[in-house]
Image 1: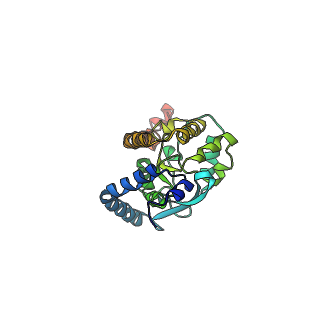
Image 2: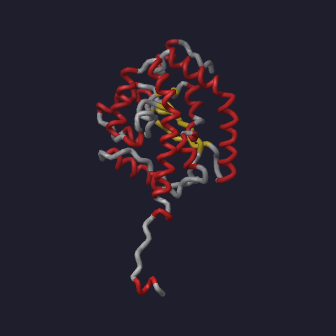
Image 3: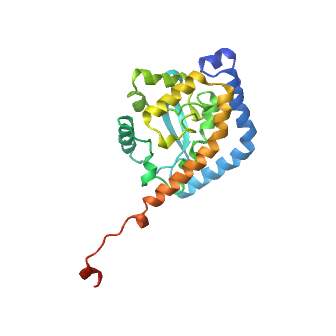
Amino acid sequence: MNPFNTKVQLEKAGLPRWKRVLDIGLILLTLPLLLPLTVLIAAIIRMVSAGPVLFQQERVGYLGRKFMCLKFRTMFVGSDTGVHQGHLNHLLNSDIPMIKMDAKGDSRIIPFGLLLRSSGLDELPQLINVFKGEMSLVGPRPCLQYESDKYLPWQKERFKAVPGLTGLWQVSGKNRTTFVEMIQMDIEYARTKSLWLDIKIILKTIPALLIQMWDTRKKKKLHSPAARPKAILPASVANQ
């Protein structure tokens, strides 16, 4: 396929010409770095866990259109996804920060999987989605169908922007924000997107990922067995 589609095709996909040029240009510019990194990550996943390297999941994109979103697989094959759905429902129905389940430890995650998730490297295969025009480098995160089904009418305005690898929400606190705040930021981006805004978000992404990795490391230590308070035994027992 031609990555620089005709103007009509681009507009139908919700991708302005400048956005498409920025997406493809940056992918081609960083390909010499990303290609060896992608091969290395795929090899590590193969070594530490049986199963496919890639994880495919149907997501909701521009104007509610569905597409198959790609990620590196960071969980053991056959892991229960109902746990995540329950956690997401809790976040949607409460006014608490959108902290991932990873923060408290998740036995479903493969070795090195937490590092891939906190660094955002698990989403590198989504560059294929970007190349196909299903996603952009910058935009709201693509949501799951059962999440979309719970949206209020005003919240569905976020679908007026093509989903992205990074976005206004991701560089504005992410796990420190509530679900409603995330939706508001996505709508703000959908209304005000521009070349300059995309460039600013891309430049802020690496610092935001470093902060996310640091937060994940701190929370992992906090919830590790060594960090848990030890039970105080009666003197008669302690002296035995």
